[in-house]
Image 1 (cartoon, rainbow, N blue to C red):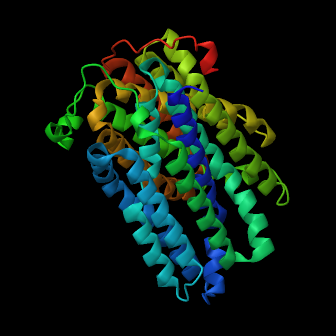
Image 2: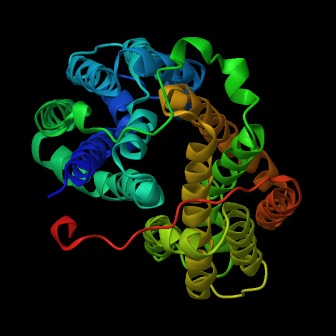
Image 3: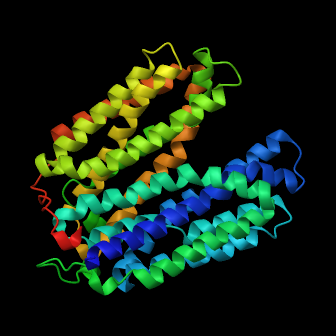
Amino acid sequence: MSDWRRNLYAATAATFIGFTGFTLVMPFLPLYFEQLGVTDVGEISLWSGVSLGVTPAITAFLAPLWGRLADRYGRKIMVQRSLISFVLIMAAMAFVSRPWHVFALRAVQGIFAGYGALALTMAADSAPKEHTAYAIGFVQTAQRLGPALGPVIGGVVAQAVGLRRAFFVTAAFYALAAILMGIAYDERKGVKRAGEGDRTGRVSFKNILAFENFILLMVVVFGLQFVDRSFGPVLPLFVGELGANDRTVPLISGLLFSIAAGTAAFGNQLCGRFLQRHSARSVIATTCGAAGIGVAGFLLTSSAWWLALPTALFGAGIGAATTAAYTAATVVIPTAARGAGFGLLTTASLVGLAVSPIASGLLGATSIRAVFAVDAAILAALAILVKRLMITGPLPKAATPAPEEL
């Protein structure tokens, strides 16, 4: 196996294990607050909301800083730093006795988080240029499939050992990811880019924002995350509105969320093939448009089961557009500043993650269909913006893998 593929598989496996471990327990946080003695439904909702929201909020501010430190001192050590901190924090969660203890630990977790963006950076650094889209898509697939499987595993674990002990299982997941990263990832085997010296000291955040297309790509990443996360608060309600009975609403909603995650992962993988034949501008614009058509399909269907078709189109479009956006960023960001650059893109993504559920929840209180109409309009606007404003240079063509690389 080639060195870059070994590094890619190590980063992907560690990411998958970490993202799966995180979602083992977080979906059941409201139940944990009940065990801590909170009985009022409103208080449970409040503590759950602020505890789940504080981590991405803090991470959004600190991700570029951790990326900058990774540019200076190495990506691997920064990922291990994050994973090890998660081991300690998740283990500490099993010993809390007050709701504010959970909130405080989640805040600390936000300070040390950010390994997801660094894993993308490591994948992009390790792969030859012609395989960049494949490498980024591979890691993004793990980032999507991990959370899809985590709650299922977590439900079984929580039933078997209880919620408190489930946090120890999550800590073990992070420990395994840290060990895997330490053993399998060799930072010395990163691909060296010709003509790119160590320019970290001369590349500021202001310089990165001035790179060609970078602010536009931040807007794209924010918009894609905003739309992607808008479904959570309203989709089950929409399924019920279409006539599904109370017993089938959870089943249909869960199936639709799984379809969206699975097709998005497929889009992550498919993006590399698109970029072999078309410019990043065309790929992003077309896949944003396709995702917009998928969302618009929600407004036309009258049966909950028929939502599977537009959901599949939406997911594939979102997945391909996201991978294309990150791949386009690697073309304009020097390798020595890529950690900081991907950190800024992660900030845009996390802001979308934080704002979207609030906005869609408020809009959904007026009209659920209005949420999907706004989502379709946002995706159409992104397609138009990219088509008109993005300056596209040639992306490297993907080479046919040599037999020993397969």
